[in-house]
Amino acid sequence: NAGVTQTPKFQVLKTGQSMTLQCAQDMNHEYMSWYRQDPGMGLRLIHYSVGAGITDQGEVPNGYNVSRSTTEDFPLRLLSAAPSQTSVYFCASSFSGTFTDTQYFGPGTRLTVL
Amino acid sequence: AQSVTQLGSHVSVSEGALVLLRCNYSSSVPPYLFWYVQYPNQGLQLLLKYTTGATLVKGINGFEAEFKKSETSFHLTKPSAHMSDAAEYFCAVSLNAGNNRKLIWGLGTSLAVNP
Image (cartoon, rainbow over all chains, first blue to last red):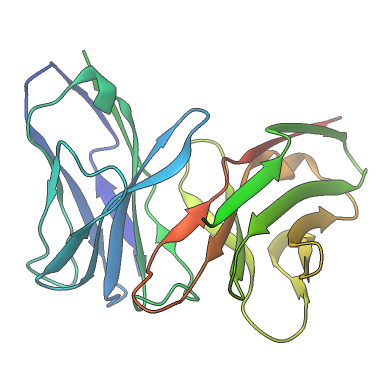
């Protein structure tokens, strides 16, 4: 198993550009989520999905879109990048939506918005 | 409101010394508790978790944590630190009440291990 994979590992954008961060898992997990990690702020949930076709907002969803057309993939779209979106982004998955499950994290995408 | 507090954003120990990383939570319902570790330039991985049953939980790499309901704590310990333990450690609380599907994360503690 590859686990949770994320691409790209690094990305530099200019303000106003759009892009998609890719996330895939091969563990047949129903639950997937996106976090951003910023110094001194820990992990903040952006969006999550409890299964194909079902998504919901986390605590910091503004400026981001998600979709879940398959169980395996959960891309995160930045609609119009802003310097405030400079961060490290992590995708995570777990077997189900219950949070006794272990979260499996991808290696992260380091995004810089100029 | 539920919250997680990790006391000490930076902890430094000598190799071979005891590691103690503190986590306190506030919750009105029985919590599920997790410790995750993040090595440099990597994603997070589970160290250990408490769901039900025995309050002393053993995890990977010699770490363990004890759930103390009366103190609302879930401190992480390791008897003897190794250089490879240098990492960021996150405590998290999960409250599986109704439709609440959020993990509440602490801000993390950076552990440095000195030779």
